[in-house]
Image (cartoon, rainbow, N blue to C red):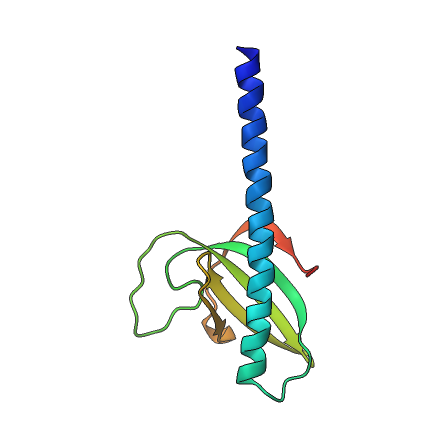
Length: 122
């Protein structure tokens, strides 16, 4: 019986470690994507610095950036938030866990349920 419990504990730990590595790679890819989007949209922007990159849980499918004319499914949604800074101006990108990523108007930012994971060291 003890062997089974130890095996389950090891499997659980390995699954968590694997998930963290995958999320870390996903965040790095999304940061690069956000930088490319920023450079395309604002060609005159300087070199962006990463102010924040974090895993979040959005309260609905609006991903923390609702439009006035749209109704959204009210379901908790895993996602990310990236804040890039260029010459003192912040650019906030919101996304989901499937790769959707977009620039969010700061006046539209809504509730974020934080997950405790965050990093600015990319």
